[in-house]
Image (tube, rainbow, N blue to C red; front, side, top):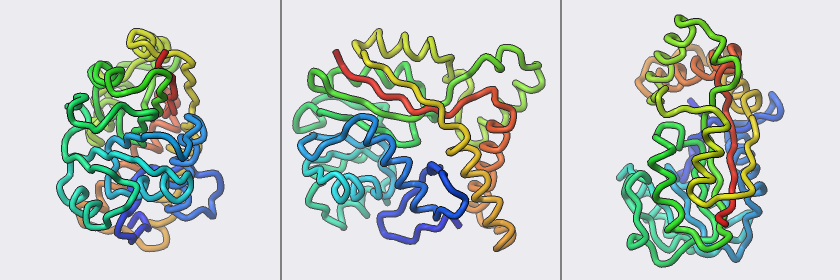
Length: 256
């Protein structure tokens, strides 16, 4: 239903700058925006966390000529697919949770770490504890997250309960979310500086919801589990974008 039949398929929300975009183009644009923001280069030793089916690994190699990538993904089928493709740039594909990382897992420290459209399913505070030991001095990190904005504090109890319910259906725990000042504090606590936080709610949440709505109008409802999950995710995106209490953000920072 999402519109990428490639072996190393994309599976993120996408960054939608035009209604006529394809799903693959939107996914690539989300990756491209993150890569530009951390100034990814061909010389970087890159760690890609939660890489899914591996489309991002191929993208870094093709568009940035990155030659040394290590990948972490918890799903067995995804790791097997990546290994079967035998991409020259991928020096290792580790099957494990990116919430369970240690420096011994990897060949060396990294110049850059990316986590594309995945980290908001987890506890950022616990995640960040692991990261400084994996990065070189002046190493960069880039990821996406969900943050409360000022509207959250003004929202009614029922509105918050509804948001919490929808987030839980998408495997996002409300207690893991925070305000921007707290996120900045967490990053600073772990030695990061040059922190940049960019709100992408409209092109990501609004864009994905609109895309799925258009697909439903063209093809009708599908009732397999995967399609239902996509439709539920789109409903959550629409809710978050319309109510504007929780923002979808891109976060980048540099280790001091």
